[in-house]
Image (cartoon, rainbow over all chains, first blue to last red; front, side, top):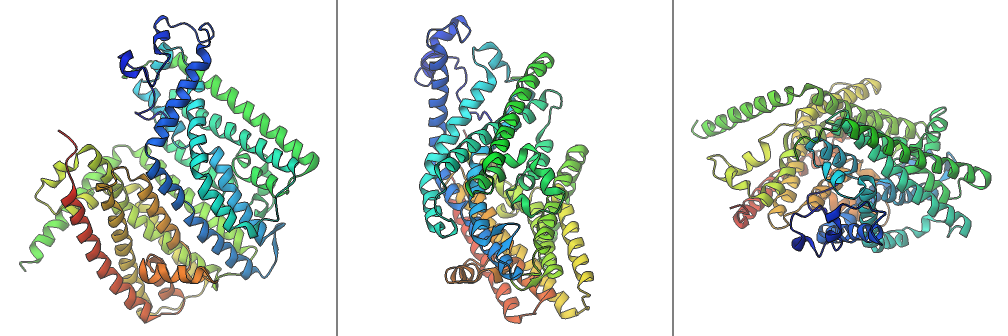
Length: 306
Length: 272
């Protein structure tokens, strides 16, 4: 999403000089590769400005982060009641402790893979014609949005680090110690790839706006469905046959289920490598899809309004 | 008779606003259909989730499957009613404050609270009331429920009271936007509240959860919103809880109105 306060081409270079140190270089519209060090400087500027924008409402943001923990309490209590009711220690290979740990970890997965406002923002830029700014400036739209999102994610992770640290400390009894370094490494890789899948998947949905002016409704359906089929509500293993196997073949499991399952050691050895390769495949697939849709969409784009 | 006249005027006004928003929604029928589809999908997900859970357990905190689904239906219907009548309006309030567009509404010769919180009906969530009712009806059939007038009346009264309590909380949260212009997180607080109301009170057991359950029952009584009507209909009819719900409704409606009026007095127009 590109909110109104996001860094855009400023009509008066002096006004925007602080936020856009590379602005004077844009006069000649040189391609990014030709400007000496311009490429890195340009994207660093985007990153810095996005970081500042995110910090503007830090009080509001921090409050939201803290409040987000409260539904976790009700989730913990619900699953406690489910395990007590079932009179069993294990449900679909998950003990009660593992189940709570899983649900806590899916919040980390979603922290990386969720992209609020991205698809809607792209569709709006198409609809309102403001997308043409990427065509007249030496900035690649997908690259810009990616950096913008990276900055937001980093701020979010930094600001929610302490509340999450507190939460995981309070819930440490649900975890059976720290996993080994290999598992931790695989977990980190799965999170980074889940970020890429989430970003390029939502970007692809947003690009549909080139063909259908209004994608909000489509987005609602996709996101609502994604909430369940990504394993955010419960581990996919709990679903009856053939749903669990079917959903694990889709890319959505990488947005919540897979990183959490990796951390808990539910996926190991050759299976882990196989699934990581699968995650990489989906990340590349959606990257190519978003890029292709963008390219095809630009051919149809009329730049009305703006 | 004198007091009924303004009330009738507000009913007429509400009818006109409802009719206007329905016509507006029907101008974009496709969009309305998709909105309804999302709600159907969400209910399907909830049903799939609890069907999966009940495949592995027979009860959740003492609620068997049909009774639990009655609870889910009750929550879904009430949430649909709240979303249909108030959520969009309250959500927009922060933007009205930020842009200064609230001025125009305050100048109208109508009660400000009515105009701000009831002027738009979100017809896209109206079918949720029907869908929730359907889930409740199926649950009643599955458990061979015997008709009991006292239970039905208690259910209907506490259902209306629960809606009023939820509205009061929403109004309290909305009013804060006057001081904290951007209230994105405050609306999230509403979702937090609705997430507390989403589960049976009996899940709040244990050394730290029990006091928390008591806090959300007696101090911030959001936990009684769905629990009391659902319990009255399909489990033990506790007259004490019904009385508590009635008292909480009156107190919260009064308190939220006073708070809202206090917030409006602090409002300073932002526009030129």
